[in-house]
Length: 323
Length: 301
Image 1 (cartoon, helix red, strand yellow):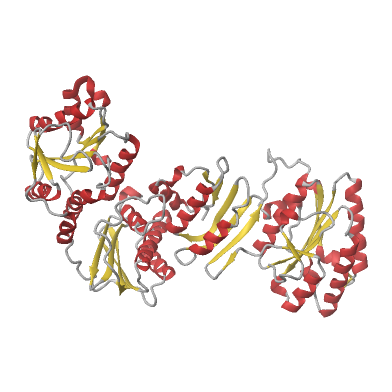
Image 2 (cartoon, each protein chain N blue to C red):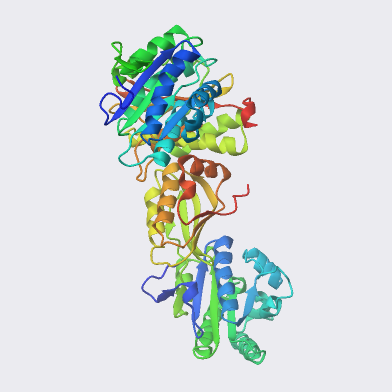
């Protein structure tokens, strides 16, 4: 293999790279960045500050042309990560020229739910960035710190992996839609003590219900207004997917308010990766879902008996980042 | 409120001319003040003197009137700008009732004097605006008032005066309103562009734009779209007053952004009174760099 181009040189190329030392990291990162810079391609290293430093030192003078992003601040959640990639793509894209991104997510210290979401996104990138022609992305995994299950998942979510400057196919690669289907375990039923919206779930009723619950949970001001916005988009999403009604309930978990909206009518399941791409110039059916993903701690979508179910977790009053 | 389509010509505030004798039926204090504000601004711009016949609840002074109509003071915010001399407030009840009765000839005579005085004082003319509802005590007064309106229509047909008679539509039945309407060649049209249970959209003239009240969500998008469409022929900057919006969803925001983006290059669309959390939404989507978009003062809770 050479580092002049990925597998097909046309569409989106997505590789993992497992490394267990600074030397192993550089053996992959240096030729990848060098060849890109030499070809006049935009090259981004979105990784840890330590790895950025390693790569800059190794590149020497050529590091002046290297774009970098401290990975923890390059999209906190999957939906924001995708926005960060697309923003970079839109700003740096040169027609007729390739682009290279090295993207190393932060894995350590994440909760089980977050890890599952990030693994799922790694798989989703194959679909979400499929249109990004001539983009070659390598996702480094540091096996010194990354748990075994995450390293294994990397083979399932990337069609190929890179060792040094060798590209090897990933035999364990799973089709993204199948991956998501397997990852999306059924949701547990709402707890017995959950508050249930009585009467018809009109947009106004759902907004009032969620607002009252959020207010009772100590939210105020813009956070309260935003809760109403999120709840409204959730119901609007179900309505625009053919639901005439919904069962809506709410409860609290430590740190979050949880809202569950269960459509009353059967509807075709939404695309597996709906609501990860930012709204475009024209209104899209998943714009509201994208907004929910940005404003909530987590958004889960399931189809149960052909009916859509949305479960949203929204940061509560104890979230000190939002005081 | 326009109830008399086809009976006579409705005219936008901005299009009133001297010689006009128009009626305005308002359904709320807000509506009355909104139109009053437009009338005042237009009058000042036309170098006319303004005579306002006020009910007992005011406004009581020129500045009180400016404040209530939310008309900013001219540049410099000084109070010695001559505006106070140009606005005259008269007690409508005292004007209409003489020993408890409506006296049409006496009323018109007083207005004639005021119109002459405005000219001697060097103004381009007199603009009379009044809330006549206060004079109605009984059926008898109603007839007298109609007579006054007929006299007034003749009095100022030519010359330098224009009169807008405001009536509180909540105080009269349809037959009475029709009678008042027929006494005026024109009515000032402030019929909301949208009036549903959830949403009300009113065309504003100073500044030019819309005031959006109530709820914008999946159920009212089409109404908002239609109302925005009416601004298409309006050139230059427009303001969308959102301070009375109870709720605005993502789809509604998109309509506003699309509208801003559709305006001619160089003209601005100001969103005034936008709820603060929606700025965050706008920034999140990346709509804050929409050409021509100006985010005005935040909504004050």
